[in-house]
Length: 94
Image (cartoon, rainbow, N blue to C red; front, side, top):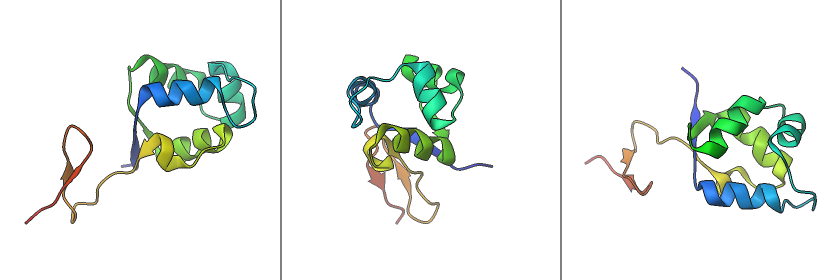
């Protein structure tokens, strides 16, 4: 089982694609080329069809966009620490 990172906010992802640190807006194709993540995965992320990516893909997209991975993605919670509620806050086990 691979580690999956949850997209923090779709609108933020779209805004960063439109105005990345390098200044040239990304398309699905250009982000796929820059990150090595498939166009299908990026397209599905942008449409909301999926909201999680493999950890390596999440890091590759963040690096291509010039932002820290935690700006765009939320790492999974470890079983010892609990789970997340609908707003991604950690609910601790007691």
